[in-house]
Image (cartoon, rainbow, N blue to C red; front, side, top):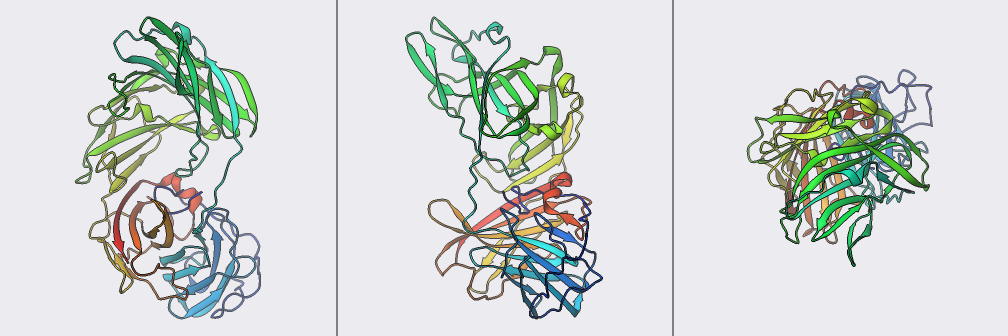
Length: 485
């Protein structure tokens, strides 16, 4: 799991942390005194802030970004003078007359990327640190097999190189950016005397020469828990080539099964997905304007929100300026209690990860054209001066929080997290202190600086949970700069 103010974060609205009883784990740092009775120290799972403005007392918790485990023995620096070490609860506490208003807080721990929060003004904060060897979680997957009712009655495409396919996907209950990549594997279907491989979670209905192939015996791997399963039925034109790059896809319909609760590791068979009636699908429409300069690759993804059963991002129904409509299920029948969000993304090209800008629109009315125009500009004037440890950017108008992430390009394309900086006060240039040991890599190392701008709408930066911020995330943009230290 990643908690970080970028696309891979769970960002959030105003959520009262709730203080509870003082945990008083024993005094804090070298420059502080035991907990003040006027401010409760409370670890915030996932990271965040509470407690109102800093007024003489500051509690800082350090946790592992992946597990929420408290980090014992982490070094906490507040401003230029106060230093402490986290205790057995992951906490360092400070009481000092100089602690008023916005502060710079730096947390370091062996084998973790350093983390700096600039201009934070909350008396109780929890800062997550990214492990430099991230936790690899292998979920216990369930295996589900089944079919789509009425598959063998669907019209067979007659045009050359056209195929009817259905791809079965599970809903996701994870936060944005926390997705896991489940390898669905392959299976073979019989074509005359031959076999052809297709995705295990795929159905196919097509003419191969004189042979009709109609196979919908899909197998799906999924995480356990409450969920729904959706089949996206589409006609594909592969142009008769061996590459997917020139394929065209037209969504024809959907099949659905809701109300599922599958145990992790279970094997389930004979699941039947019911086709959504033609009258219960409709075209969603979107318009796109005022996109930041240079971001010509634009798409909007309808996202079907099912509450406790998760969500479906309808990537095959992507909307764009050149294809502004796509077929999606209506909010009727088993989807009567659901709603749609739209996530729009603009980037330079389909292959370039950055620069990019994203817009979140929630509870959209799919019966009307969805207008997307409120894009967040991309940061400009990125500079990295490793000799003086100075990193800066030109700022982004409208951003609530700005982030600078420094990574080292390790073996292959892997990026090792080095230092994460969050500016809550509009700071656009930061000079990192010299530490022992130094988190920055040796001279000559290949590095990257990623600058992220986040618009959190009405979020209260003195009272928030990072895991909840996604609920009111409005806009986000990213740009990066590669350099050599």
